[in-house]
Image 1 (cartoon, rainbow, N blue to C red):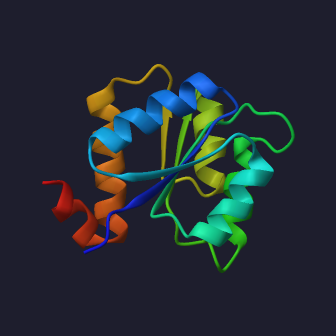
Image 2 (cartoon, rainbow, N blue to C red; image 1 turned 120 degrees about the vertical axis):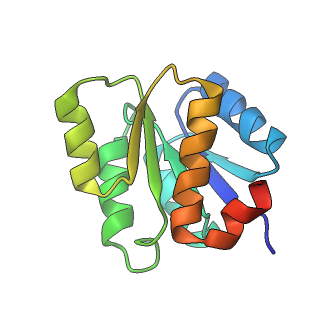
Length: 133
């Protein structure tokens, strides 16, 4: 069984490092992107098991990235977990309407984030969740 690969997208180097460290510590493979354009390219090239995505970034927003991934036949089945400081209910609804599978507000407790990641991976590839157990 292959190790799930997670694409962490955030314009903050600190956030990328933090989430990468947390996920690698749980046995996931992690790749990163610091903006929306890089995220789209890596999603198409690397075929991650999941995208952990910030919303507020220069250039393409996380909402735009989510919508593009959801509409592209190559990436439409990759679950997107939006992880952002945008805490409004309308933001959450908009993110989900763009194609995100889950939406969480920063700061997020480590165990909550890991549980959401595992749940999304299990929903798309049951063998990925079994590996984490």
